Image (cartoon, rainbow, N blue to C red; front, side, top):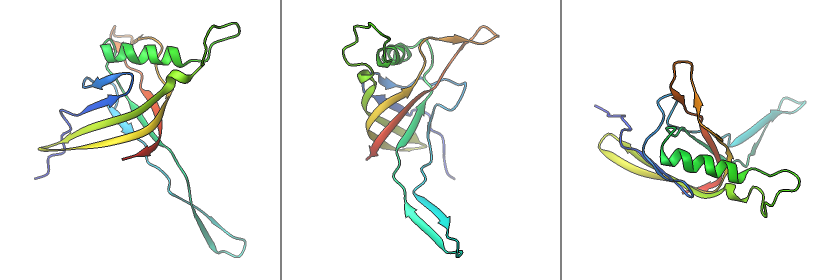
Length: 148
C-alpha cells in the first residue's frame, strides 16, 4: 500500500511565516513543471535541441482571514510600484521573499523542498467573497531562481 496523503504539510515563506491552513477552493500549492529542453527541426529535417534556462514558479492558496493571509496582503500592497508623487523609496523591493520551504508530509514520511532567491509575482490585495456568502481565496504566485 502507498499512502499519498499530504495532511500535515506546512510551507514557510520569508516575510509571511509558516502556513498550515490552506484554502479548500483550489490546490493548496502547486509547483509548475519546467521545460528543460527546447527543440526544433532544421530545413533538412534534422532535430536540434538545446538546454533552456528557467525559473521555478510556486503558487500558494492561503486560507483568507488568517494572520498569514493578512501578511500576504500587506506584502502585496507594499510590493506595488506607487504612482507619481509617491513617497515610496524602493518601489517593489518588498516583493523579495528570499526562500519558500515546503515541509511535505506524505503518509508516514516527510521531506523538505526549499526554493531560493524568490520574488512575489502576484497576490491578493484584499479578501473576496463568493455568491454563497463565503470568503474566497486567491492564490499568490512566487518565482524562484534556485532550489535545494
